[in-house]
Length: 225
Image 1 (cartoon, helix red, strand yellow):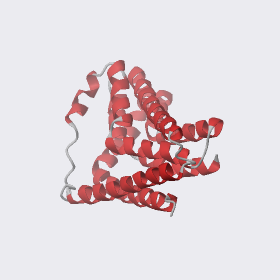
Image 2 (cartoon, rainbow, N blue to C red):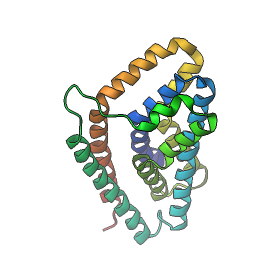
Image 3 (tube, helix red, strand yellow):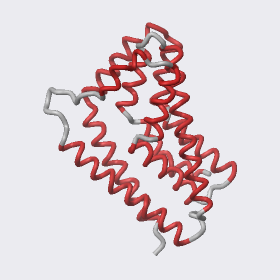
Image 4 (tube, one colour):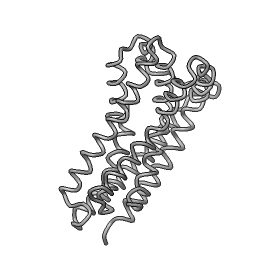
C-alpha cells in the first residue's frame, strides 16, 4: 500500500496545483449562490477524479499491468510519454507567457460563473477534473501507477482515496474556509486569486517541468529490460 501511495502523491499534487481551477472556485464563492455552488463544485471535482481513477485502475488490472511483463512495459512507456508531453507543455507555457507586468487572459466562461446553477457548478468541476488534459493525464498516470505496484482490493482503494483527497485540497480548502468564515473569508480569497492571476504562467511552467521529470523517470525505471 505504501508503495502505491508514494507513487500517486506527486501526481495528486500536480492536480491540486491548478491555478485556473482555484480561481474558478474562488469566483464561485463570490457568487450569490456560494453556499450551494461551492460544495457542488467540490463534489463534482472529487467525483470525477474518483471515477476516472477507478476506471483506469480497473482496466489496467484487467490487462494485468502489475504482473504481465509486456503489459507492464506498455504502461511504463505510456507514463514516460506523458512525462515527455509535460516537458513539451512546459516549453510552450514559458514561450507563450505574457510580457512582464501583464496577465494572461482568463477563459471567457469565467465571466458567467456568477450566474451558475448548482448543476452547472458540479458539471464544470467534473470537466475541469476529469476532462482537462493535464488532470486527465495525471489521473490516468495515477491509475496506472496503482496497478503497476500490484496493489489490489483495500490497498488499491486506499491509494486511490489518498490520491483524490490530496488532489482535491486546493478546491476543498477555499470551500471549507468560506463555509466556516462566511463573508469574512472574501478578502483573503481575493488575495489568493490576485496572486494566482499574477503568477499563473510561472506556476504552470515549473509544475509541467516537475511532472515531466517525475513521470518520465517513473516510466523509464518501470521498464523491464
